[in-house]
Amino acid sequence: MALYNHLYARKHGGKWMLRIEDTDAARTVPGSVEGIRYALEWAGLEYDYGPGRDGPQAPYFQSERLDLYRSYARKLLESNHAYRCFCTPDRLAETREKLARTGSNATYDKSCLHLTHEEVARRVKAGQRSIIRLNDSNLPTRPPSTDLIFGQLRDAHASLQTDPVLLKTDLFPTYHLASIVDDHEMGVTHVLRGEEWLPSLPLHLDLYAALKLTPPKFAHIPLLVNPDGSKMSKRNGDVQVIDYIRRGWEPEAILNWLALAGWGARHPEREETAAAFAHHDAPDSTAIMSPQELIKEFDLSAMTHRSSSLDPAKLEYINKRHLMRTWSRPEGLENLAEKVHDEIKERFPTSQYTSVEHIKDGILLLEGRLTNICDIPIHAPWLFVEPDMKTQEARSMLKKISAPQLKQVITDIRGKLSQVPEPWRDFDFSDLLHREQDRLGYGPKVFMKTLRHALTGMKDGPSVAEVIRVLGRERTIARLVVPPHGEPEGAKL
Image (cartoon, rainbow, N blue to C red; front, side):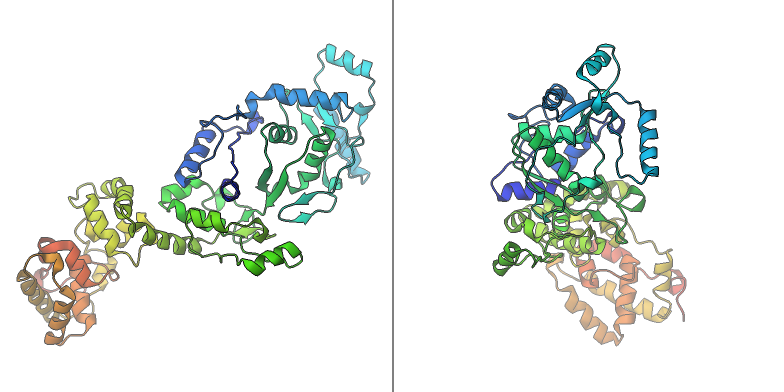
C-alpha cells in the first residue's frame, strides 16, 4: 500500500503521508512504528508528512487526536445521525444470538435509539459507560459508491453491522470515524487502501454525508495471497519487509516485484480503460523497471480485480537483473560489496580474503549465477577459504578419473601457470587451458573437472580460467597439488 500510494502521489504531483492508526490499544505492538519507518526508508519510499516529517496536518498519531474525534462524534449526536448506546457486552451478545436465531441480518435491536434525551443525560451524569453508534435509519441521501479500480459498486449496506460503533467506551474512535475525520482534516484527496475495506466504503460515504463533508476518491487494491489462494501469514513464509531485508534482496527489485503483482489487467467492460490501453500497454509481471520508470508507467486503471500471489521465482529473476543494473553503475559494485562485507567476514572469520575488493571480484565472477548478493558464500566459498575436499560433492567429482590422468593434468598446468608473466590478471588463461587440453588429449570431463576439483571442490561454478584469474598466482598454484598416493579418496584407477 505504501508503494502504490507513493507511485500515485509522485506521478500526479501529489504528496502522501504516513499516519499511525493506534486507537486500538489491544493491537498496538511496541516498536512497530519504528519498524514501519525503517522498512520505508530501506525501500526508498519517502513519505512527505508523518512521524519525523511534521507538516500542517500534525500530529500523525491518532492517539494524539482524540479530542478531534470526540468533537465530530458530538456533531453526529446533535444532528441525530448518531446516538449513545448503554448496552453491556453480555446484552449485546445475547441480542446478536437472538436476532440470528430469527434469521435476521441485523446485529443489534436499536433499543438505545429510543431512549429519551432526559434518560440519556441521566445515565451519562450517573457515569454509566456508553458507546456512540451511527443511526443508520437516519442517513442523508448520497450518490452510489464508486471506486477507482472497481467502478460503481452495488449497495452493500446489508453486509454492514447494524448501527456501527463510532466511539468506544474508552472514548477512543473506531477506524471508521477516525479515518473519515483525519482524511478530511488532513486534506486527503485520494485513499489507496486494501480491498478488505471495500465492504466498509458505504459506511464511510454515509459518514461523510452525515457530516456534510466531501469524500476523497477511493481505490481499493486487491490483496496479496499465498500461491494456493490462502491469506498470507507468518506461518506460510516471508510476509514482512524485514524478512526480505534480512535475506538481502535489493530494495528496487522488491518494489519492481510488488508493483507488477496484479498490475497489467485489461477491463474491456470499462470504456475509459479500453481507451487507455489503446495508447498504453501495461508492463508484464517480470518487466525490469526502476522506481522512476514505475512512477512514469503506474496506472490504477490497469489493476487486476482479483487477488494476486507473489511468485518467488519472479523475484529471483527481477533481483538478478537489478543486481546487474547496480554493478554496471558508477559506485554500484562498491556499494554491493560493502553491503555484504560484514556478513561475509562473519561467515569466514579466519579468512584474509574478505576485503571489499575480494568481494567485488566475487560479484563479477558470479555475474551470471548470482540472484541474491547474500548468496556469494553459497556459490563460491572457495573464494574466501580453502575448498573442502571432504564433502560428498568433492569426493564424487573424480570417480571416473584415474590417478595418472589426475597427476598429469595437475602437474602440467601447475608448471605452465608458474611461468605466466605479470600482470597475472591480463593473461589469457582460457587459451592456455584449451591448448594444454588439446596437447594432452583429454576431454573436458577429465581435464577441466580435475582442475575445478583442485581449485574449488565444487561441480558447478564460473569457468576454470576465470577462477584461476581471480584466485591469483599464489592461491592457484598452492591448490594445484597432487593428493597423497596420487589420487583423492573416491578416485578409480
